[in-house]
Length: 160
Image 1 (cartoon, helix red, strand yellow):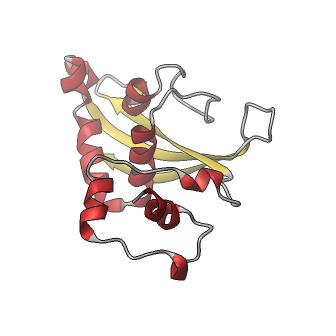
Image 2 (cartoon, rainbow, N blue to C red; image 1 turned 45 degrees about the vertical axis):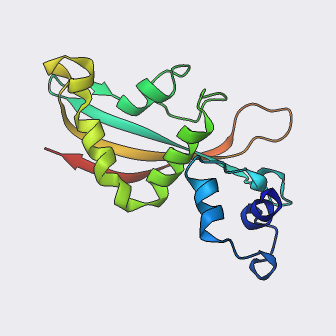
């Protein structure tokens, strides 16, 4: 099973060489999230970093980032660049990537952002509008800690 998963998840292996994966094996891997980041060891490891930044405006006019207040307790918000260390686990990284790549998830993420005041217990924290930005940079070369060529793009916005 591990050898099959290695072949299936390694982008360097051509699709015609990847074995078919029976449903029971897919369930055994996906349900407990036993993914392996084989792409990190492939000849073409990812060369870019990506993160989300939320610029939300509260009822009293403050700007907050509900996502990074929870996700990156080691980084000041708002983020203008991807910090050298965010402190995320692999599941959170997968979540961020899926939010960016899957517009069907934006609605649930939007509702989570609008429920900020429920989580803080403060009525003045009610979100009236927000913008979600994707922060991207080129991975730093060996020995360096900061990414290069930082880019920002709007993913989506909302207001009530």
